[in-house]
Length: 199
Figure: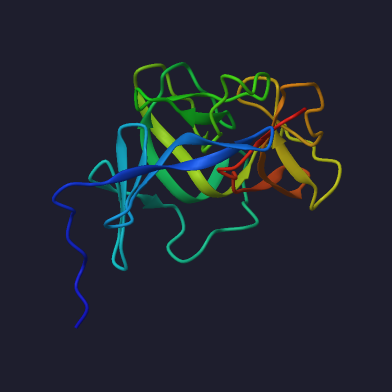
């Protein structure tokens, strides 16, 4: 009978790489060469056949099997959801990155030199220094969204925490895919850990 893997006695972390002007550089997401666990900021994500934990707590899934789509009501989400601490005030739909302090901050595509890849989305209002729900992968609905084309690729916006249908096009802008529009007011949220900086 298979058994759940045990923790490493000592993790050997290596950073996953991003691409900036055709050069690879380390991101804030790490993996352990020995056991395959992931680390975001100071939080460790444990992955096995039996469970998925972050910071020694089980990662929540709103839907019991799979991901719910379509979502029936405004400001709802389904998928892999974790509880994390906000570094600043967040509202539903704010796209965030995980800073080295282990907190969530609004991501934006303005400056490739200081950017971190967006890795989550707030799915509730969270005040700074408090914990709240962050969607890592799944579906979300916000009735104020107005995507013009179903199936269009969505990018990290130059507005902090925002999403746009238009690829950022100014020099040094970050180009990161964060999902796909599944309806005028719904998205499949699946942020890529890789991004490019506009030449």
